[in-house]
Length: 103
Image 1 (tube, rainbow, N blue to C red):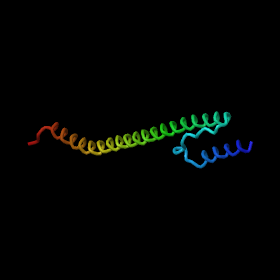
Image 2: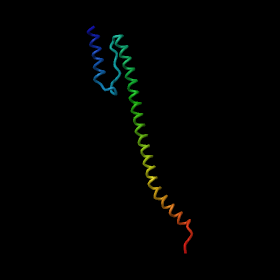
Image 3: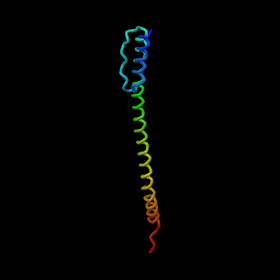
Image 4: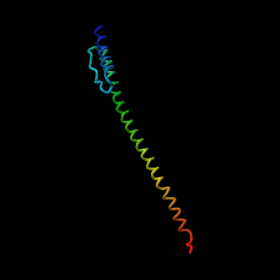
C-alpha cells in the first residue's frame, strides 16, 4: 500500500508542478489500476492541449477581425471627411452653373 501511495504522490507531483502546455505524457507505473488512471489523464491532457491550441487560434482570429473592423471604420470616417467638403463644393458649382449668366 505504501508503494502505491508513493506512486500516486509521484504522479500528483508531476501533474501539479508542470504547466499544462509542457506536461509530457505520464509514464506507466506498473500498477494496473494506476495505469488506467494514467491513461485517462494522458487522454485528458491531450484534449486540454488541443483545446488550448484552438483557443489561441480563435483569439488570434478575433484580434485580426477586430483590427480589420477598426480599419474599415477608419476608412469610412476618412471617406466621409473627404466627401463632405467635396459635396459642398459640387453643390456650389452646380448652383453657379444653373443660374443664368448676368450681364
